[in-house]
Length: 73
Image (cartoon, rainbow, N blue to C red; front, side, top):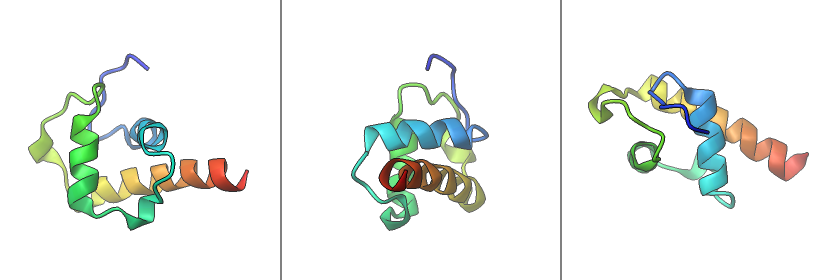
């Protein structure tokens, strides 16, 4: 994936986090750690200060969907 990601790209970020942390249950991740993991993604190019609880929740939800597809599919 070569697209530059922003906080609005929850689905794409969820896929990348699922690949980067395949054994992690997304619902067990604190928002502070989630924020750090998102901003550490090489594709992520947005301002780290622009996040909110609702954007982090959307990313966590997208990541959880990927997690369920992989572990239950």
